[in-house]
Image (tube, rainbow, N blue to C red):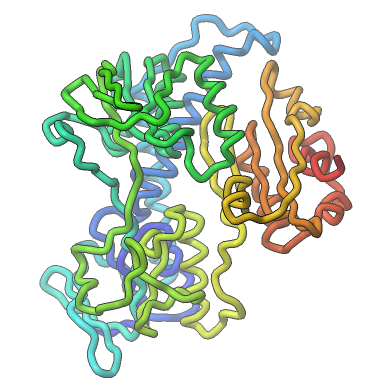
Length: 450
């Protein structure tokens, strides 16, 4: 059994590449050891956003009186929330399976193991009792949760995102170790449902990599809602329902019914025979060129294993770039100029392009256009007593190089700025576009016309 392309990993990168390559007429084999959709669909992006939407609806009902609507005694049913999440995931996994079938992709369930690469470049892969040959290989093995060597952690029944997504009992209190994207999204969910939430972050602000000013504003909003933050604190021990933290030589313990570990993820590079190919590594992943080729021309890599951003939309774009190159249709390589980052808290926070902190570290000159979201009539109409910030960062020549939004629906608006950054649009060009009124998106035009 010889294939034009073998793909290891059925997450966003893998199933996207399989669909595109199969649609173009290539003979494709897709190996997935668990469920199609990968971490994103089964344990990450989709299930968390499904839960967060339930929490958002609950928040809206609790605040309905601000809009002149009576909705007393709001309640929730956590098992039903989890059941709905499972239904959504099941539906989308079935959709991916159908796409594979429609595009003649051979889906092979099991653990793939790279056996080697012959003199003519043929890649041999084993799975179960069978072996498969392919002219090209695309590695999309994704990432895994980092488990740090914290004393006492291995003896504690802690949660990762996997366990948190399946719980049917609301903890009275929750300690979140790690104030990054995953940590803050779960903190938001459980805070909305009424848990006492503690967030421990080793750095001096939550959401590392996001705009620091907006991250601080989001933190302040959640502090008003009762969430407790411990910034610049290192976790030194976990003992059951007690987490010991330290800052400036002083330590104390935080009590919580459950502990959620969310200190980050790392690319999966072991367990599937990657070492047999001896491709060049880069940091904790695999080095690729602009067309996603590794140091072996017929071996490609896409998604978290490249170690760039560990985001599903980055993975999809990398996979598309790889397949275009395989089909000899790649006019240009992968661009990382405008990769949006979003945190689906309530309110949402989103950013794309350069941050002030990044530009300051690089010693670059820039200008900031910043405006409250309340300058948008639609935002005021739909966010009673709410506020937010729209920040655009311009280069010296007026080119938009960064954009950062706090306020709903930041996740849907950030692509406007992302397109502007990718196309190297200047502020006056963006200002010349006709934005529909009333929309929250008008805030971007308001910002550039300051």
